[in-house]
Image 1 (cartoon, one colour):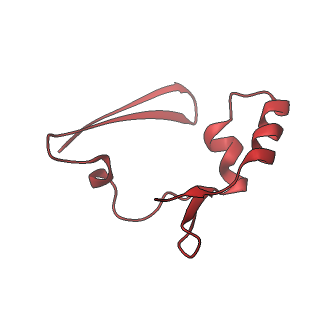
Image 2: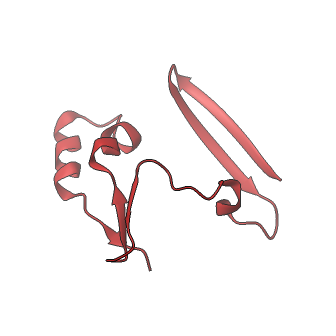
Length: 80
Protein backbone atom coordinates (compact mmCIF):
# COMPACT_ATOMS: atom_id res chain seq x y z
CA UNK A 1 0.00 0.00 0.00
CA UNK A 2 1.22 3.47 -0.86
CA UNK A 3 0.32 6.82 0.62
CA UNK A 4 -0.42 8.80 -2.53
CA UNK A 5 -1.18 12.50 -2.52
CA UNK A 6 -2.10 14.62 -5.51
CA UNK A 7 -1.94 18.40 -5.42
CA UNK A 8 -3.00 20.70 -8.22
CA UNK A 9 -1.76 24.28 -8.19
CA UNK A 10 -2.99 25.02 -11.73
CA UNK A 11 -5.65 23.59 -14.02
CA UNK A 12 -4.18 20.68 -15.96
CA UNK A 13 -1.17 20.29 -13.69
CA UNK A 14 -0.85 17.71 -10.94
CA UNK A 15 1.99 17.10 -8.54
CA UNK A 16 2.07 13.66 -6.93
CA UNK A 17 3.82 12.35 -3.86
CA UNK A 18 4.34 8.63 -3.21
CA UNK A 19 5.42 7.12 0.09
CA UNK A 20 6.05 3.37 -0.05
CA UNK A 21 5.60 1.12 2.95
CA UNK A 22 8.65 -0.42 4.62
CA UNK A 23 10.11 -3.04 2.27
CA UNK A 24 8.55 -1.53 -0.87
CA UNK A 25 10.26 0.53 -3.54
CA UNK A 26 8.83 3.37 -5.58
CA UNK A 27 8.82 1.07 -8.62
CA UNK A 28 6.21 -1.09 -6.86
CA UNK A 29 3.61 1.62 -7.51
CA UNK A 30 3.94 1.28 -11.29
CA UNK A 31 2.32 -1.30 -13.53
CA UNK A 32 5.61 -2.29 -15.18
CA UNK A 33 5.29 -0.03 -18.23
CA UNK A 34 7.73 2.79 -18.81
CA UNK A 35 6.66 6.38 -18.45
CA UNK A 36 5.69 7.77 -21.86
CA UNK A 37 8.34 10.51 -21.63
CA UNK A 38 11.25 8.05 -21.25
CA UNK A 39 13.39 6.94 -24.17
CA UNK A 40 15.25 3.76 -23.22
CA UNK A 41 17.87 2.18 -25.48
CA UNK A 42 18.71 -1.27 -24.08
CA UNK A 43 21.39 -1.85 -26.73
CA UNK A 44 23.47 1.13 -25.58
CA UNK A 45 22.35 0.92 -21.94
CA UNK A 46 21.10 4.52 -21.89
CA UNK A 47 17.90 6.35 -21.18
CA UNK A 48 16.73 9.90 -21.60
CA UNK A 49 13.68 12.07 -22.06
CA UNK A 50 11.93 12.03 -25.40
CA UNK A 51 12.52 15.48 -26.91
CA UNK A 52 8.82 16.07 -27.57
CA UNK A 53 8.07 15.64 -23.84
CA UNK A 54 11.04 17.52 -22.34
CA UNK A 55 9.51 20.99 -22.00
CA UNK A 56 5.98 19.99 -21.00
CA UNK A 57 7.17 17.40 -18.46
CA UNK A 58 10.18 19.06 -16.83
CA UNK A 59 10.65 22.64 -18.04
CA UNK A 60 7.16 24.15 -18.16
CA UNK A 61 8.11 26.86 -15.64
CA UNK A 62 11.33 27.87 -17.42
CA UNK A 63 11.73 30.75 -19.84
CA UNK A 64 12.05 29.88 -23.56
CA UNK A 65 15.83 30.49 -23.61
CA UNK A 66 16.40 28.05 -20.74
CA UNK A 67 14.10 25.51 -22.38
CA UNK A 68 16.11 25.74 -25.62
CA UNK A 69 19.44 25.38 -23.80
CA UNK A 70 18.20 22.33 -21.91
CA UNK A 71 16.93 20.74 -25.11
CA UNK A 72 20.35 21.29 -26.75
CA UNK A 73 22.07 19.57 -23.80
CA UNK A 74 19.63 16.72 -23.36
CA UNK A 75 21.07 13.30 -24.14
CA UNK A 76 20.83 9.74 -22.91
CA UNK A 77 22.37 8.72 -19.60
CA UNK A 78 23.73 5.35 -18.56
CA UNK A 79 21.10 3.05 -17.06
CA UNK A 80 23.62 1.27 -14.87
